[in-house]
Structures are given as structure tokens and as C-alpha cells.
Length: 306
Image (cartoon, rainbow, N blue to C red; front, side, top):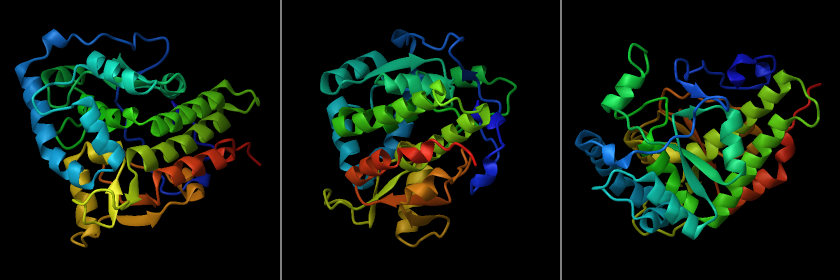
């Protein structure tokens, strides 16, 4: 994991402690790819899905980006059904060139970027607050709450990310991020492990502040949205607490978080916190501007030291 390398951390701002400590992390040598046993999904797990879905669906339909709203419709995600990952993957494959692979949990950087580079997206089949989640982290101080868990669960993966995989432009963007991450790891330039880790952290920062916790100027494509902004970050869209934080800050009912203009040079050096509501959101003008900014600035992720 990149967190063990800290030589170049002085170049970052907003340094945070490692909030994924104690999370089980799978690498290439582990049995990381699994099959979802959909017939074994319990009534309790379905009720948890229903609770999470009902909390956020109206808010996301009002303030989510058009890519997200259209993706929910294309995938036919609904309140009643616990997600069948294979069925969802088949739908995505019929719309774009991506597929979903069921995984045992949190993947290391090598696996994650390799999957994305090959147009595959990982999803766990375990849901927060369930007995399976509790058993996985028995005697471990991992948060397991409706509002937050540091290990992404099936609600975050499916509800937050999968709708975007029905949009080809977004899929191309995500694959390019994966390809760049994989290129950093292949290390054809012969950089030190410290520099490889530093560049991966830069890419993690970019991913965090964009497709995980990104906000966009209101594109005026949804008459329900009366705010200045709309949301495209999966980490916000799959979290009731984070959604309400964005809404309340937009409406000046809270000053917990600030909205900053998107500047890719600032984004790549800004670290983040897994464990708390975000204290800032970087605002893009449009998805196309985001895609182009990434493509024009890949050199920012190939720092070679001084």
C-alpha cells in the first residue's frame, strides 16, 4: 500500500492520518475475485439495501448529475431488489464496454488500476450493518454504520458507481485513469518506490476529489434542481449524510464545507480523509472540462523528484 511511503508527503497539503487502518486489503496473490451467491442473500440484507436506497433516491434524483440519473434508469436499480451483480454487469456490458467483477473487499492499487485499465470495475457483495460485515471485522475497530464504513460496500459500489458505467464518455475517462495508474506501477522510467507511491497518491487525490466526491456547476438539465451545483461523486451520492452536507452548505444552512473552483494542480496535491464528512468540494464546470483537464495534465502524475 502506498501509505507506507512518506518521503514526498511534504509536497502535499491537507495531510490526513491513514483512515483505512485495519481494513482488510486484497492483493494479486490473494483470492480476491469471488462469485456472488445471490440465492443466499437474506431478508435482513435486503431490508438494509431498502433502507439505504429509500434514504437517498429522492435527493439524488433532484441533485445528482444527468449521467447518474439516466444510469439509474438504464440499470433499473430499485428499492425492492438487492443488487444481483452479474445481472447488473450484463446490463452495463450491453450499453458500454465495461463489466463488473465481484470482489472479496478492498483492493490494493495494483489490482484496482489494472481492472480499470481493462474496463472492469470491482464491486463487493457485502452490505454495511449486515451480520456478514460484522463477522468480517469481528474484534476490529472498523466503523460499520448506516452513514459510513471505510470499506466500500455493495451500496456504495452499485448505487454510487454503476450508473455512471452506462455512459461511454465517463467509461473512457475511467479507463484512462486506470491505464495511467497501471503505467505508474509498471515503472518503465525506473523511479524509486517512494516516487511510485507519491505519484499513485496524486492519482488517488484526483480520483477522490472527482469521481468519488466531485461537485459540478448546475448544468440546468434537471428542472428539479434549484441549487448552484449538482453532484457526480459516487461517495456523495451513496451517503445520506454527505448529500445533506452538500445541500445544506449550498443553501447556507451550514458552513462545514467550502466549494472551491476545480484546479487540477491543487487537486493532485490535496490529501483527503476517509472517515469524516468532507470539508471541501472542488467544483468542475462540466464533465467534458474534467475529462479534458485530466488528458491535458497527465504529466502531473509522473513526478520524478528534484
